[in-house]
Structures are given as structure tokens and as C-alpha cells.
Image 1 (spheres, rainbow, N blue to C red):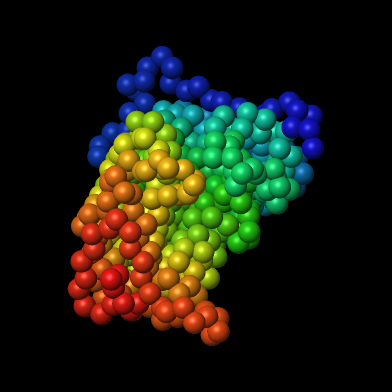
Image 2: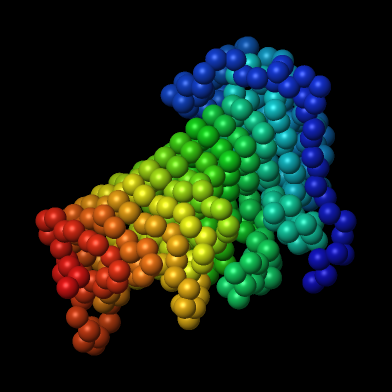
Length: 426
């Protein structure tokens, strides 16, 4: 396929260029109040003070064939520029759109609501995304303070035709394919209830965001779809993920450089590569990772369970205060792993990422690997403050494998409390 066969379609809204101060949302963000508002929007119970902006009224076609990109843009622009409380509505029906950017800031005095109940499909042809995903994701929200994206709608990336062009398994500096959603500089946001299917790249990217919640989401792609991370977080703080079901071809949740105060709670993961901190050390001058909690979640038939991974490079940074607690593993290949030789094991370089204060607490279930716990840490920066508390994993792999069920530790300072199965490192 020639990626230059069609002109790139990417529509950017430039709003509030003259008076940015007029775009500020009034009052502090109240997450509980915003969640109630999201639920009321889903139930059609919003008060008369909220003006609705329906994409059909702006010319969108619900026939699944006509590209409605410009109509979605016009609807968002009208809702975002409205000086009162506003809700953009994507009703039931089938819609087709190319890459679009919803650019803020907005004039609404409270969080802009986008109520999505329809099926929205991406253009399948990669020629619509010629800039590469760093320039062209599918649906991008940018520079918005106060956003509620809610509903029962489905966003289908039509990625199956594009996955064969993903070369990230062969190149460490590859050009990633388009994410279904990218949130860039979006603060005080709730994403609730929507479905994402078969993205070309990631399902959801959250970058340079603050006070961001992702709730009750269902993210689906085949287990062999390349680099289709569920939720990918970078350079963001206070991000809470809860009550989600994620089955995809890469990490269910990945948290890379600059991720601070991230909570993953009650998430069902599988298939996929599990919950991952990293990769870290990939770029120069990476920000530290701190205050990560993954809890009350399950993993089924995943390649990894909970993992911290860093490249063997000269880029120094620190990953600390990382807690994996109350997790259930079902037939997981590598349940607990720290890998500081990720990407290039043959290199004589050692990772300059420091890992400390990591706790694995109350983790139980089954492993299909005889090495259920593996800490492969950096020789120049050994892992410190690793605590294993009540680990109960059982081997359910091939019965003919005579290797002992065990833990392996290299350059790691580990302490143990309570039950340990497999046995602690020697």
C-alpha cells in the first residue's frame, strides 16, 4: 500500500486565540460531582441549563459510509465556544471519521460533556494518517481544562489492515501507528463507559495531563495485535483507572517516564502483556516515575503479570514507590518481573535507571513458567528496597518440565514477609 495515495485529513480547531483568560473554567474540579454529571448525561437527566450540540444537526451522516470529520469538528467548536454549560452528542448510529483534533481551551463555565452512544469508525486506509502517529493520531483532545467523555458508544480503529505495517518489534525507534484516543494537556477529566476496539496503535494515550480518571472502559483487540497498549501514560500526574476490562495485544496499562501518582484499581487484564512500569531509559532526560499503585485486579493468559522494564542506556532516572497489591494471576507466563536488560540483552551497557521501594503484596494464582519471579536488575544500579509479602503462585505449565519452580534474582536487594511460593531467591 502506498501511504501517499490520499491527502492527509487532519482538522485542527484553533479556539480562544484572542482572550485565553475567558476560557477558564470557574471553580475547582470536583471528581465526585463530575462523575454524577457523567452518569446523568448517560441517563439523559441533565438539567435545562445544559445546551446540547448534536453532530446530526451539524451535518454528520449516521450511515457508516460518509466521512463526517468536518461535522464532528463543527459540533465540537460550537459546544466548546458556547459561553454556558454544553454537551456534544454523538447519538446512536454508525459514523465514519478520519483523524481529528479537538483543540481547546473552551469557554464553558463547567466541564464540557461529550456524550457518545453511537458507533464511530476510523478510516481504515493508512494514507489518512501519513504524518505518523506522533503527528496524526485518530481522535485527539488537546489543551482542555474540564472534560467529561461518557456514554455506551464504541470507537473502532479498524486497525487490522494496518497492523502488518507495524515494525516496532524490529526497530527501537519506530514510528508508532495511530492511537484511537490521545489526550494531550487535558486536565480535570473523566472518561467513562466507552468502548475501544482494534486501534491501529494504542487504545488510549494520556500525556501531559493532570487529575484524569478513566472508568468503566472496555478496550479490546486481538492478543497478537502489535503495540496495541490499552492505556499508555506519560508525563502525567494524578491519573486513576478503575473498573475497566482490557484485552489487547500489548500492555493493558503502561506507565512510562513522568508518571506520578497513578492508580490502577479493579481492572481485568487479558489477553495482553499485563501491567507495566516502563519502558524507562529510552529517551534522554526522562522524568522520574513515582507513586504507582496497581491493586485489586486480575490477569488471565497474559505474557507478563506485573513488570518494571528499563533499557540498557546512559539515560539516568528513578522509579520509586511502586506497589503491586492484591492481584490474581491466571495462567500468566511471567507473573512478577523486573527487567533492566529490556530491548538489547547483548549490549555491555548497563541501565542507569534506579529502581527502589517496590512492593509486591498478596499476589496469588497460577504461572505457566517455572521462573515465576525474576528480578534482573542493573549491575551499576542494583534494585533496592524490593519487598515480597505473601506471594502464593502455583505452577500449571507443562508437566514434563523438570526444572524447579523458583525465583531468580540478579543485582537485587529483596526482603521477604509471610508465605513465599515460589521459594525466595537464594
